[in-house]
Structures are given as structure tokens and as C-alpha cells.
Image (tube, rainbow, N blue to C red; front, side, top):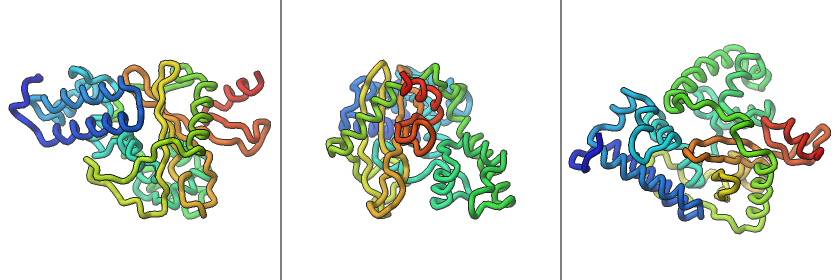
Length: 300
């Protein structure tokens, strides 16, 4: 299946370029050398394929990609994401770009302003949470979303999630048992915020990208400081959540932090850390979705 690159394919070259760019960005930002080497090796594999990688994906899915030399589950999912959506969210983040927009904006019918209202008022972050809100009526409590618009969003969301499941393959969402402990997530959050406040973290600027959807940083958003580190057997990337790094005049809180963590297979998981504003843990940093563990952590 893999020979010398006597026969090349444009899409293969594009994906290899994206993988190399991710490797270089990680290296420039001080990430673990193992991750850097893994992406570079994956790029070599893709570029040397003697068939169109899209044909391989269409016939065998993520599992077929994962059987290629030097390509683990996480990289296979990244390749599938590029093939299905034309984007790779992890590369966007490495370039300081993705968190200026919400994941909800991938759903037709949801613009930037509405996405922020949904985040702020329903306190949800993921498309799965949006799906639940759309089905249980919560979405219709948002100003500007009536029954007809909510129905349209539900239909569009079904399509978006269906496409995303194609490139996620059979990997299940991580649960607390397959994630770093809460105390480690809170440690990474604290370290990131301290370093960001001290101004010692890299802030990827807007540069020419391999992907075609780049926008200039002229929309009022400040660069996103990013931190990479390895601890407890996990590779972490930390950065401020989507709209948190807006212009200084914006009133939105600036303490929401996205933590992305990767296991040995480079599979990506994510949690959001924020400051609680009510209840017994008011003022404490909380890992969204793992609130009960945070109660135990602070009680101990």
C-alpha cells in the first residue's frame, strides 16, 4: 500500500503539509518532542502513499487510516477531520485562530452573536450539549430563537454531528475514568493562568496557513497565549476559551480556560475550567462536567 512517492496526490500532499505545520508549531511552542516527531512521521507516511488517501478513507473509514505505518488513532482522526470538514481544529488552535469562534458556529443558523448567547446563558460548550438543549426546549429560551428557528437548528445540528461522527470513528467520548484527575487539570489551569498573566507564553500570530480559511486578526481579538506541557503521562495544551480573549473593552469574563489533553495514541479530549459564581464553591476553579469531583477535591 505504501511505496516511494512515484505517484502523488494533491490531497495527500495537502494533508502531509498540515501535519508538518502542526509539528513545526508544536516545536516552536515548546511541546513534547515525541508529539512533534509523531506528526512528522505521519506526514512522511501520507506523502509516500501510492493511492489517494480519500479513497482509503471512503472505503475503510478511520480504522483504515489507523492501520497505516506511523499513524495512530489520534492522527487518523485528524486526517479524517480534514477530509470531511476541510479543517483541523487542533492546527487552528496551534495557530491561535480557532478559539475566536465558537464550535456552535459550524451549525447553519447560528451566528457569532447567538453562539455567545448560548454559551453565556445555557453554560454549555459542546455540540452534544447543544443537541440536548435543542431537544429539551432550553434552546428556545434564548432570545431570538423561536420554535421554527430551533427546529431548523436541530435539523442542521443532526447533519453536523453525523459528519463529525464519520471522522471520529468508533472512539468513545472520554469519561472521568479515562481522563487526568481533577487535581491535575486544576494544576495545569493554574499554571497556565499564572504564565499567561506573566506574559511568558507564546502567542501564535496570524501567518500564512496551509488551509484556505484563514482570516486576518483584524476583528478585535487579541492573540491567544498557548501553553504545552507533559505531566502525569498526558500531553496538555491550554488556552483561553473562544471569546475570552476579546478586546479589553469587552465585558465577558476572561478566566474560562480550555484544556486539551492527549493520550499515548494522540487522541484528543477537552475540558473547560472556569471560576464558579454561585453555590458552596463560589470563587473556586471548577472543571466543567466534573463538578462533583471538584467538591471532593476542595473538601479534602
